[in-house]
Every structure is written in C-alpha cells, then in structure tokens.
Length: 359
Image 1 (tube, one colour):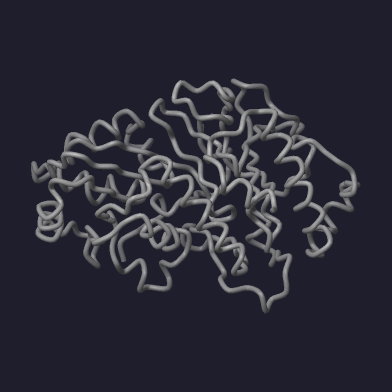
Image 2: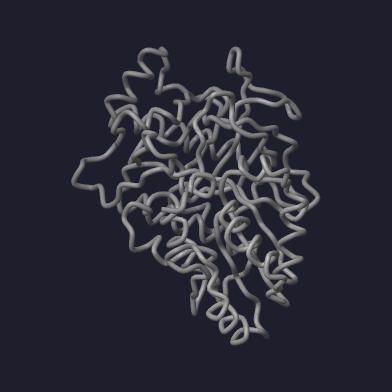
C-alpha cells in the first residue's frame, strides 16, 4: 500500500510532527526523484541547483520551484496521451495563466483528498447545496479555470443543487427563497468565491434589507481578499455580516491554488488555516530563502503529496504568511497552522473572486 493510500485510511488531521515528517520526507523525496526522471525541464532545474535526488532529505531541504513557472512552461511528468484534463489558473485580463496537466489518477487523488478534508468538517452526508455563483461557470468555457473546477469539485458534497445568481450575476431571490423554504429544517451547505459572495450576494441583501434566515448553514468560500481589504473588510467583519444577512451560518474560509488542487487549507473555528496530512507549509525569508521561525512573516512554500503528473509537489508561491504553530491549535487538529498576510510586492493578482468583472 502506498503512502497516499495509507493516508486515505486515517483522519486527515491526525499525524503529529514526527509521524508527518517521516511520511512527507519519504513521499516527497519519491516524487522529487520521479519528476526528475520524467520531466526534462524539472531535471534541468535540479541539475543547475546541484541537487542529488538519490539522497534522503528533510522536507525543509527539498527543492522548490516558483509557481510562476507554470505560466511559461508546459511542465508534465507523464506521456501526453495520459493527460485527461488541463487546468488553468485564474488571472486578470492580459495575464498569462498557469497550465496544469492532470492524468486520470492525479485527478482521482485530488478529488479523494478534497473529500476527506471537507467531510471532516461537514460530515459524510450530502447536504442541500446553494452555490453562490452562476450556472454559466460550467457552460462558458472562458470561465472554466480554477473557479469552474472549484464549483464542480464542491458540488460532490451537495444534493438538490441550486445556483443563487443568474447569468448576469444578479441574485435570483425567488429561486433562492424556494430552495430555502424546501430545506428549512435541514442543514444548508453553501459554496462560493470570497469577493463574489460579498459583491453579488451580501451587498444585494443589505441593500434590500433582506435576510435569508437560515437556521443551520455552513458556508465554504475561497479566493483573494485584496478588493475586500481595499473596502476595509476583514475576516471578522466578513463573517459577522454573513450572519447578519443570511442567518445562523458557520463560515469556513480556505486557501488553495490551481497548481495544487485537492490539498486545500481550511480555516478552523479559531481562525487558523490548517495543513492536513496531505500537505505542509514552510515560510521563507525573502532575502536568502532560509526557513522562517514560527511567528516570522515569509514567502509561503507549499508542499503536497498529490502532484504526480506534473512537478507541483513543492512550490514557492507569491503569497506571504506566518506559521503560528504545530500540533497545538485549540481546535485539536494536528499539523501546522498559519495565517495568510497577502501577496508579495509586485506579484500579479490571483484569485477568481478578485478578478471577476461584469461583461
């Protein structure tokens, strides 16, 4: 049984520091050697670094590549015939987008991992699902990037799914009201992109003085916060306003990227982003890329055991963050927990919700 198959057999936040380091160093070392032998561009990078893939390394010693490389190179570690899906990252008009090449097995592992993580928060029963987006996200191929993948991926946790926005991004009050009335005595699951929820749902409800009056809601949202910060909206204000206009809703923000789909980082009840058994985080000083101590702000490096069809298992992002601790979050989940501080200076804006514009 592979390390990944073993991980699927246990709870996603159950490995302590020593157990996780042993598993990650072994599995990420295997992936590094695999990509070295199967991706010519990746091999050139590691050869230039003088990295020896045959030696055992800690997770902190593993090589990383800038996430931006996926915008300019077709990086894959399997035959083209094995590619079943090409995912693109989101970006503003005129930006280059990352291209991520996925095999059938890689796609399956991403879906399985996402399921393990999300169901640890909501349970295994599929819930009535209100998607705070437009159904056009599935039909318009220009929208089908990380945003479309997120919508489709999250749909597997719901049933009797309804889209809250029409094709013009207007809130469809009648359709939403009928859905909420039908499921008024059940938990309601909701999903959307951070800024779009605020712009097209929350603001509209506030303007009309309407409250959804949900009794038992669970909202997962993902996406950039830049525009919200420009409007002086922080996490506390966001969550409070959600409850002011929607009712009793548990709000879970989570962090992830197209280049490492599946191994998302969910914010717990205490406001901390969490690494699962499938992933890890290292923050690095911008001047020499040495690892930061807990509490020090640095550039975020993300590790994931999932990427096998492309060399995305160890990526240096363009985000800054602070690792707050490990294995001792009050929520009880094991692993590192952290806080996102924003984009590094001069980095391109990312995030589906930050870049959407009406057409």
